Image 1 (cartoon, helix red, strand yellow):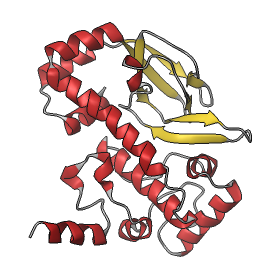
Image 2: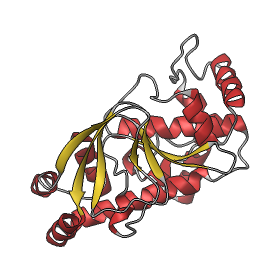
Image 3: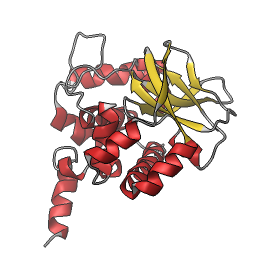
Amino acid sequence: MHALARKLRNLATIDDEELQALVTMFRTKRNIRRGDDILTIGSSSAYSTVLLQGVACRYKIVENGRRQIFTFQYPGDFCDGYSYILPTQDSAVSALTECSVSIIQHKDIERITATFPNLGLALWRDTMIEASIFREWNVGQRPARERIAHLLCEQTVRLEAIGIIGGAIPMTQVDLADAAGLSTVHTNRTIQDLRQLGVLLRNRRAIAVAHWDRLVEIAKFDARYLNIPQVLSKWSSPAQICHDARNLH
């Protein structure tokens, strides 16, 4: 639960008592094999699911039979945070690696947020940030290089926000292609292009950032939609930082 605690503290002022009260509400840890669905379309339940370990994605199979990924999910993320309000799943969640999850009953969410309003605020903000990610991804006019770079920036920021710093970004080029709405061939060429530019590490099967500032510049990345203001200067484009600085004067 450390990742969940860290994320909620980024979203609201929450103390140890509130976090402990929330953690004790979770039940039934279970393991999910890579490639299996954690949640399916049309399912309905009286509880919400949080990812404890591993990497997952929210997706649909579209008309041409391809998978469209809407967002990636990491430890501490609710797989279905909105289900407390909208109980029927309109998309599926799949395990991209071996995963473990736990559940919290909706009646327990109602009870604990009534007792600790800051927890309710943090959970509501978390749902709104996921909606912001959906909107940010729905920018089909971005060129392929910028689109891929933006996705990689976002994943790096989100991983660092829960304490996973450096190393490879835990996804395949197929996953990245399905998130960017590009063919696997086009995605592979774009990745190779970024490696030749020195932005990504070369001669590795995994995707790993070599030059962060250059990646941010290519992506025109502005991290404000992820609601991590304490590190905005690190994770926004230089042009955006200058624009914000001018607006302060």
